[in-house]
Image (cartoon, rainbow, N blue to C red):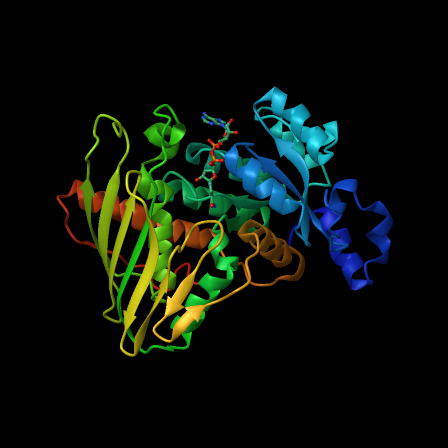
Length: 380
Ligand code: NAD
């Protein structure tokens, strides 16, 4: 039988009963700081790692989510415990550090653990969260390598908990529109697609993103996964081969990790793909040239706002927090069985491609064949 936490079970049950049973037991945090009302079955989320993404994106977004709310934190920095407890009304009983984290298993208010740590810590904390019986959202890139992705997927399967990757764009309207254009072949066959995801603001040379033992790699492990993702949902296919190149213009600064990488993908339909990622270039774009026109997102993977146009005119969708949409989508997947928009298999597929790109570069830019089938493609 599928394992389900007592609280999730109660919530699911109460939903079936009209939700009356849980109204009086809703935690304070479930009301949101700005008074946003939550769904009565709202799931409790604990953020693991209170760095910039948790602080400036996820925690604020969780004040507006409808199907989940911030109820716990896990941090290695004692000062942050008090700051966050005060700001988000988090009781002491729902605050953990990296050592006592496993005790989270006894906390029925926490349904989902969201791992927002340096990449080298994703597998450890995702696996520990699964063993604690919690559903898991793991930030991108899923892990340091494919082996770790397999270990996370196995742990979640074994514990019968859900696993999602922090790929927020799959809940974002411009990206959904691209998927629709691809799915419905609005512009016919896609002959060429390019995707750039790069930025130039790594000003602290000591940060973990420039330390291979913590990041697993440079630009490719950071923004590169967005370029890979764009090529795949922008063509609706997984690549069958990849050929890659690395460029270094500041070897003194990017000592340990890749600075700029380009790669060419071949797709089964004949679509040719080209990607670029960098920690020393500014670019954020997806462009597809098709038989009967073209479509473009620029920017294509920043938080807000994305923008886009096609050969028929501008795209125009309402702007909303991507993180809010993403976390609500995952919570609905847990609560209602709606599709998992970014499953673990998708994170693993991207890591297979990342490894192939690094292998291509190490092998003197040789073409690497890929056998991915439909792996990780959910809805395009
Ligand atoms: P950050 O450097 O701002 O925060 C990292 C957190 O991890 C800090 O709270 C730090 O104290 C903690 N930490 C624990 N052990 C550490 C160690 N050994 N070295 C350094 N920090 C340590 O990073 P971030 O930008 O919040 O990124 C965290 C994760 O979220 C990364 O995997 C990143 O790829 C991902 N991320 C995703 C998005 C997205 O759009 N989905 C955006 C930003 C970051």
